[in-house]
Length: 345
Image (tube, rainbow, N blue to C red):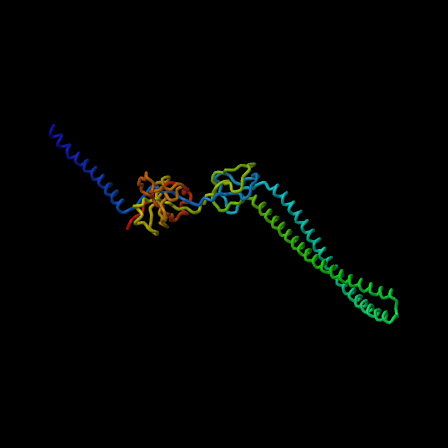
């Protein structure tokens, strides 16, 4: 019996040795990896997410895409009903035509005023000539009356004619001043009519721009997320209809602990493993380190000055470019979890 125990003892020792060596080997690898790498499993794939927003309110007329469809840049995706906007445009165009007619009337009135001004100037010239003749006649009649060559009645008629022409000349001068003032008013009316036309033209252009906004185009190429809109639904300006996911540009954002970043710098190579495809080994390059911790971007960032402060290790976002990302476009998805490790040299 003792011989059998002695025979089995070496086997147990061998098994125990193998187990210890295996554990030691893996422990050595683990420790060596920890000493020569900085790693984190707090990482995920990121890409550009562009919301599609209407710029005017209205009822949805047609939808040209489905959930998760691929779209091209400037592709028509949604069209709103523009019937009401078109009716408003017709009214604005009618107001514009009326403003054009008002401008023509103002120009015609201004032209008539210039004609009247020329007539008034002609009347002044005629009255001035008549007044000069009447003044000479009155002077001559005064001399004749002094010589008893004419009667007093003839002298009075000559004086009346002279004084009448003086008043007529004054009236003509007043008419000229009034005509000149009226021209200034009519010129202002023409400018006002022209300004009204410019305003209505701008309103028409703005309305046409609004009508063009009833057709919503994809701002970039990519894939559609879940639609938040249906035909016949009323949407407000700025309401998110859906989101386009850029399927050509991907990167990794890894949140390293604050005590891990001292040896990290742009240009370092990174090993990447995706939780969804753990057999796939990706390579990346550190592009940049955030200037603030992730907590600083929170809606309610922690305030260490508060009385109930508990120290928590902060994390710093690190942006990592995926090498040869085009080869993995079929498996890359925004939001997928990843593990990254950075070899330290």
